Length: 176
Image (tube, rainbow, N blue to C red):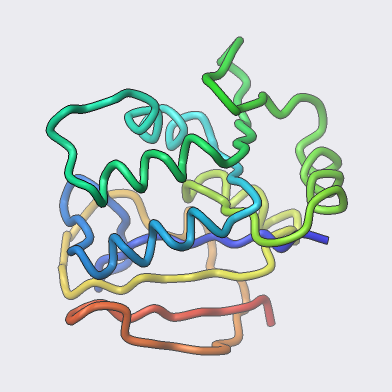
């Protein structure tokens, strides 16, 4: 059975915004390795549209960006959306009841499936379907934006923490 994991970069004041701070090379390599090892990703519409950037070739990319794009393109993706009629390569729309669809997905797969986006993570948290939360804490204060937790923080238990980069700590929590 697969494990659903919600992990994102977060500012010290609890916001996620990939445009305000980006991972340095060490953390980016970590994300490449994570993506290569995942059984797939579940996206909400907004995060999926942001990540579609990696579907296109960009000649200015360095080797790390090319490696991430290759890993992202290779993995299966499931997109939760009420407005999209179609999705890109190696992706499928999640149709019908969200809880049933995600439970079936977890039952049919092994490994880790990434949950991408705080809004979708909020819905899946309310359904009790997220198995692990990974916060990549950056020494940045944004003061506004989209919070990591889109609703009340669920009861969590810290299971590990580690330094991923010079300034980034990964906090790993499971539902309490």
